Length: 119
Image 1 (tube, rainbow, N blue to C red):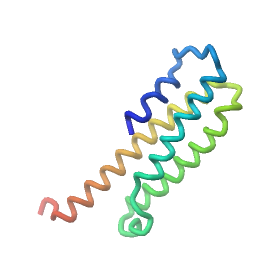
Image 2 (cartoon, rainbow, N blue to C red):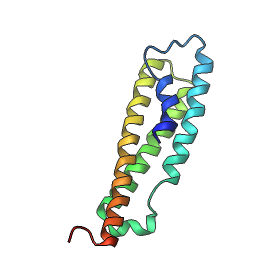
Image 3 (cartoon, rainbow, N blue to C red):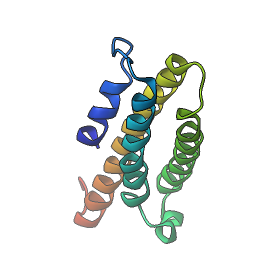
């Protein structure tokens, strides 16, 4: 996920010169597509979420992140204040990275439970 968001993160930096605002908007919009696809793909199955409160939390969190991503993606092409939009997108990327880590932790806990844990 980090490699996927690196280009997008670079586009959102304040020092990035936006000489051609239209091209910047389309570049950001294109970079959001693989992030959205990855959020949809790398996630525990909803049928198994009832087994764990943490799994249910990650599903709800993912749905919230997708809603924020969709809202911001629709604003990329029309937003007047692109600096504020870039800040909101940067915050979203940080939240997605934290979510991704929680999903990995959840998968690790499942493997640890199957193996027998520390007991």
